[in-house]
Length: 295
Image (tube, rainbow, N blue to C red):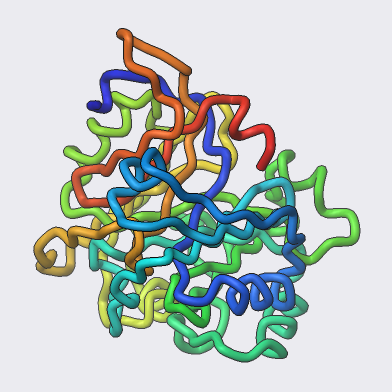
């Protein structure tokens, strides 16, 4: 099935692969206040075909704000997260957690063990040309990259103002994926139904501290669906020679899944619980509305 066979409507959530789903679930609950919704063991021939792995998987479903995160531990383990994992590696993918207070969010994170910083020098206030936000990147205990994101007080999007009552961690704003070629990846996602919402060119000392690397020059393309949040960001580092494409299996820890609600059928193709990969091997899990509604 190709990208032109269906139309995506919204990002329903994200999926993480973990060698220890119980441990990672506890980390997300302690560090971010994630709510444990359900647990189940998935398996059978259809699941194996969908994920291209042998055996089943334990899945814990969490809620971070209104967004869902599935943490999946496969019966047949894959490869651990590459270390080091650089922001320009195509295996690099993070999702950004919006926080109402960066100091409180960082204090809670620092009180939880197992994570490792990516950013140097603490949270970085980016210049207006890069969005004017304050951000901090780090890795969870399994090596998945994450970002804390705080909007300026005078420029909080209405979507997040509705949630900023008394919570520190408000939800997931976007997932950012590193790509080798902006034009090729943009065309792929436009065929799925995404549209380009904004483009920026990020560089300078603040970006270097945020990424934990010298002199980054990164082209950022924000892509959205009818439901603008969460959205997708393409990161193309012009300052680096991009490594070869990573070929990730579903049971590899770096194989983060973007869960997309798609039309149930288009051109005679049933999209229920289908897994596809983009030009840089990022994984997309297509679900119909009835599947997304239980997340």
